Image (tube, rainbow, N blue to C red):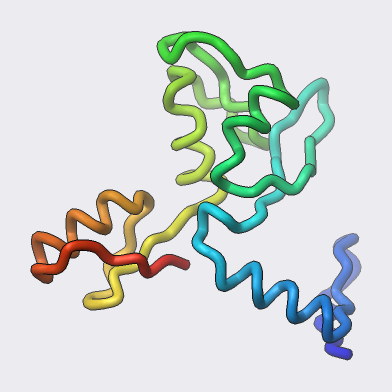
Length: 135
């Protein structure tokens, strides 16, 4: 058993070998397929549901009622955010600002928040078609 105790912050910090293996498997997934804890606040209560990154738009629609045309203005309901934006931008905003997606070039270690920007960089700077390094 691995004990990763780090204080009394309310999180489980004692992991058995199976837990540790599961965490390592999740960490090896692409960022879009990793689980994140939803920090959307509704009526003063934080959601706290684990959500797979690339399913976040479905979660927003089904659990938080974020629906409508792409140009409809919505407020980010994430804890301590409240930024106003078009609905079409909310998922990108959450993945970049709150999930903190990172795509790192394995050639020069430059960090990007969007996979397509990394791929364009790799093609232009390193003469390759794509790069799938992510963290």
